[in-house]
Image 1 (cartoon, rainbow over the protein chains, first blue to last red):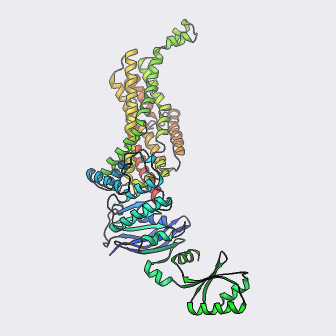
Image 2: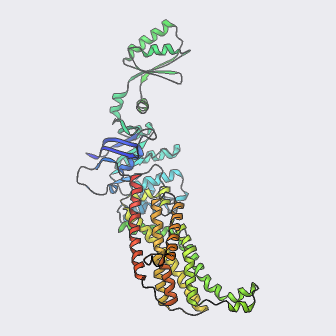
Length: 303
Length: 258
């Protein structure tokens, strides 16, 4: 079942189109990562989905029913990229307020706050002012406030980007847990994070969706045989010659390494090695493999 | 209603934690009580500053009602400044730090959000001004003579209405402008302009909210307001409602458009 359907969603700020007619669907219980470089329109998209920003045009639909006119925010939990809190409140007070604002009774909110504080490891800091929390603690508190009302959809904007390695690990572990309970949509510019917990990825670039699909499917479709080699004395003419070979689909030079996407690996390897021997090219390293999702990502956002 | 009362409690607690509940009433109290006390010690003050006793005797002693009216005018300058400065960031500040997102991402209407802030601001102000006015009345009564209480609470209501109008203006400008400082400056400039115009064009502006401060003094001095009293009350109440509606719309616009 689709929990969220987005159709032709567009947001313009003046003449600048931040999000340009994007459409996608998110299945209930799935985890989707919204990938893209800074400025791709991820934050704007997530803000529209969480009801903070109104779209210029397009439709956002939660659930199946067309007639659901309820406040979308009641069924969504949102964590902004740079969560800011009322620094004079304690962690517990803030969570209780969040829960009550989302419609919980005082009793429910207070027992849920206690449970969540324990879960995100803020038990001992619960009574301290948020003003004295570290960045990682704030991020974990932010995560707790996002799930306090047990939302159907959890939207997180760059949940780990600003954290140190340890904080990052803690939050990733929490996300893995939360993924079991709810549908998760989060943005990141780091592919590795997406691969670690998500089923589906959607890559945005300049306000448009450039690639989308399940991780498995993308790996299958986009992983191409690849040859990486290093030679001494690279001549530009020779690289051009390589580029012209029928089995070379794509070629780029990255820090003195020549990276080629090829159609048929066995054939390409044989011919290349033969050629090196004939032309007495001094080969330093030769490696075969497959393109990674990272390559796909880089290609998508550069092209 | 529910989110309004939750947010109101949050705002009131915030005012406790950042000591607004202490220092705003304190400033008002000092401003108010200073007048009867300095008037009481005026002969000694004059003597100490070397003015001859004959000259000092010729300086007329202000009446108790004049003393209280003088305190009112203190609130109009310094008191207003304190209020506007302490509340200038009430919306703009929260928006700038991003803390407002955490509230507005929950199912909370901008109406609840703004009105809760406005209610809390009004509560702090009424308590501060009420205490100060009562204190001034008390000291004037103890040191000079008692002013009838009816004049006190009537002047309180009129003056409070003027203060509430300025608070409403503060919250509107704080919602409209991105900078808290700009909001404070424009609020004070508009308040000064209203007062000035109401004084300069007295006859043409009988309806003006700026007349309320004058009416409050007049009630103290003569026991009754002018013929146009109800007109300016009506206009002020209508303005407060309209400005609040604008503040709600401005807050909504700021969030959903940009």
